[in-house]
Length: 279
Image (cartoon, rainbow, N blue to C red; front, top):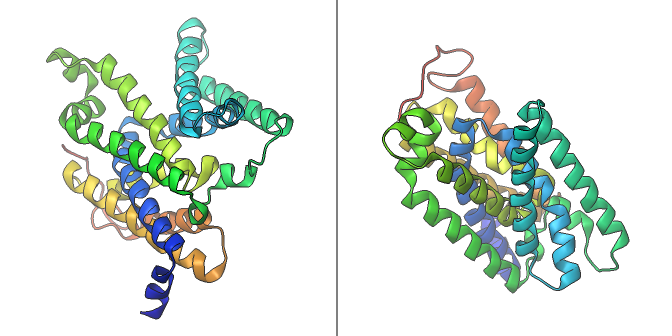
């Protein structure tokens, strides 16, 4: 019990635990839609593309979230434009765009006089979050969570069967860009916890783990959120005691959860039969 309770005696640890758990829960919920939609690469693209936005926002004296969101949405728009105007396949376009944006961010960091710690941007630093960072993360997380809960049924149908969703009058174009916008916001929120490079794990791994454990979407969302929150809390505590980077601890625990589900899931583990997910 001392191992669990002692970190709670420090204000910065309580703040890190709360913020990490909140971001983990939001990313876990969103990861279910990312998994069903097959947008793992899109999540990777958006998470890397926000780096130049962070640097530009710092240079202009704006909140990091503003620049990161603009460049995140800009990367999605660039991917869509190139895909429509060329014969190049989407996965190739995603690779070109996100590496280009990420490289631009590295160049801007090297040429901008600032006290920005590149390692904290790339790999996160939940133990060093300032009060303003916490408020920003809370606001973004609440916006993403509210949108996902209010439009849950429409988004679920859009991910399962967009053709049927369109046929019954659902605006799938709006949902497409809304989901991409929420992805950008979640990447900004995860920036404070696990950084740009590893936030894609929080947007994919919990949903993939839950997908192996259940055939019901409602249960999938609950399992994804629970696994993500648990991994974030344990990751922060383990990091406190071992002096290992917090982001690495969180992602390794999520990966371990996925491996356990991959091996021992009741119906979809490697030793079990396979089935289909139903809403």
